[in-house]
Image (cartoon, rainbow, N blue to C red; front, top):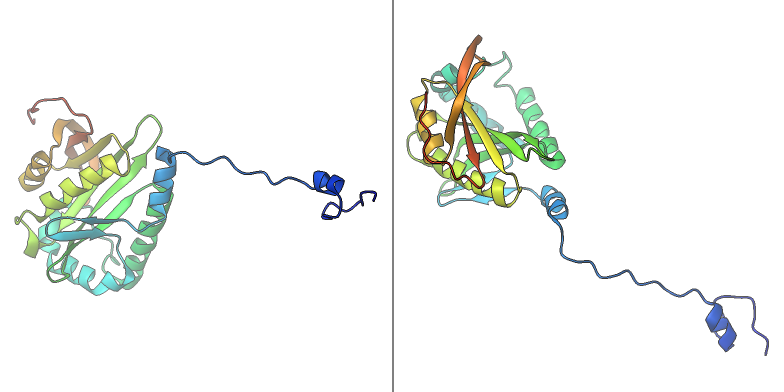
Amino acid sequence: PRPCRSVVCKCHPRCRELRPRRRHAPPRGPRGAADRLMLSRTRKVRIETERMTLRLPAHSDFRAWTGLRAQSADFLQPWEPAWASDHLTRKAFTNRIYWAQRAWTSGSAMALFLERRQDGALMGALTLDNIRRGPAQSGTLGYWIGAPFARQGYMSEAIKATVHHTFHALDLSRIEAACLPENEASRGVLERCGFKYEGVAQSYLQIASRWRSHVLYANLRNDRRGRTDAG
């Protein structure tokens, strides 16, 4: 019999030769760093420490967050930019949640709440912001903790875990931080977590509605520097 014109016919050997052959994709090798980073950002980040869980904020955190911020206002405001008039409102908090989710998905920032594991208490927050890729591979760390939880080692524990996650999961090479020169508590936390003093930035941020100079610190993934003297 003569071969038919249909490529799906199996009645003649010639027809089988005319059928399109299926092409098998070559097996994929191990994921590269870029693939791993893209995959990680599609998942919700969660960092476990000895006493805490560091996680993305959620809408259900509003009452705990606004209560802690209000309770700690006198403790926090001397070190922070001036609070907007709507700082503690539901709308402002909702905007923070949306920003945190978009920033994590895009890879530009990682905003985390500190939750105590034993009772679920919200204790504070930290943010790895301004994440730069390419030749920089760096980010800027900011943090705060509520007055009832201060000076109990929680922030040091959180920063150490975040530094480890940043270097090994996010594959950054440098984490920067800044604080007011007279904020001895914040400087002590950074130094205990491996940050080294690098200098002073003049008129770095507006704090309490005034331009203030800040001392600069950095933690390097492969840091061979010895102890640096603060100014």
